[in-house]
Image 1 (spheres, one colour):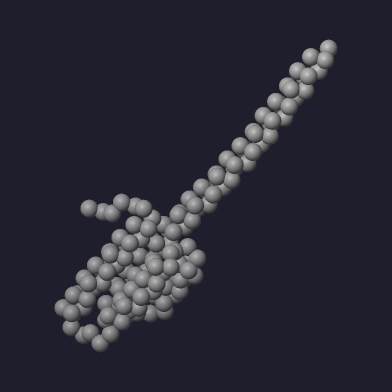
Image 2 (tube, rainbow, N blue to C red):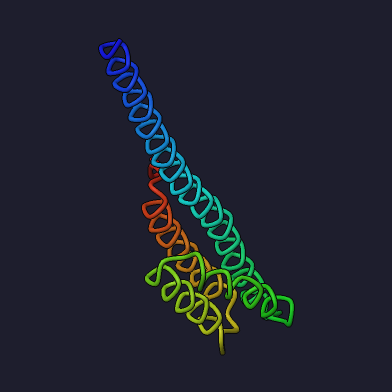
Length: 144
């Protein structure tokens, strides 16, 4: 009889230990899943934001080259600026801000259409280099 009771206690102890290990395993799995989903959410937000940033820079170049920089361009820049502060890396944000100012200022005082085309091509190259830096940060393979 005492052997049966000892075996029952050992069995209950094994069940309790197994339950405890299962609970710890489920907790760890949930924690890892939460962190993975959070990281994926931030990456998706960055992807969307970086696409918008490239669009804004290209629109600025287009409107500035036509000497029609207007409130619309300024609003588009300001619209994503707060999101850039939250989701982008510090390096990308600073470069975005500097590149936008550079594009806006590059056309000041230009009246020659040939010079406008030349500046537009240089700005397009700068935007493409900036996009490559964003791709690298997002771990997206660079275009060939």
